[in-house]
Image 1 (cartoon, rainbow, N blue to C red):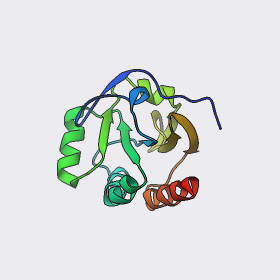
Image 2 (cartoon, one colour; image 1 turned 180 degrees about the vertical axis):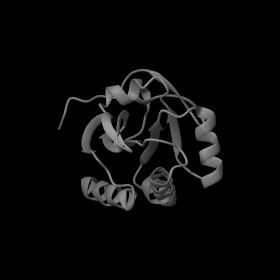
Image 3 (cartoon, rainbow, N blue to C red; image 1 turned 90 degrees about the vertical axis):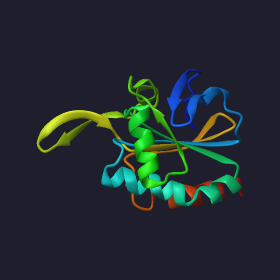
Image 4 (cartoon, rainbow, N blue to C red; image 1 turned 45 degrees about the horizontal axis):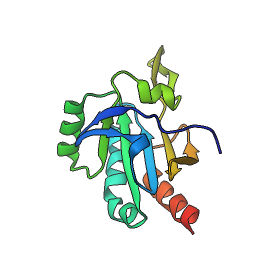
Length: 151
């Protein structure tokens, strides 16, 4: 696929600090979303959370990433009863590493924001990526693709 690797750097999450490059997980999903507690982002996070048992059964760890603070992530997690871990990327380090900061048109104004994107890694190697993701039904699509990748 591509030469995109997991960065060897520590990031704050809703459950402590994590270094994605040092994760000992067979399958890893890293998804990027624009903002906590917005309709599309809530749909996506709840979608992954509702399917967590099926992802767990496939030895898959999931991280959601946005530029929100850990506190905002914790509020989002509590409010929506999320079962996935969220990474705070306030410095946009991960966002730039994965090249998900794109120019968007918001109410006629051009702004730089996160393009909803998902990446599947197997033993640290990028296997599949999704760009310009639509939130509704995305978690189900990723789960189906993961099943076929493991078949």
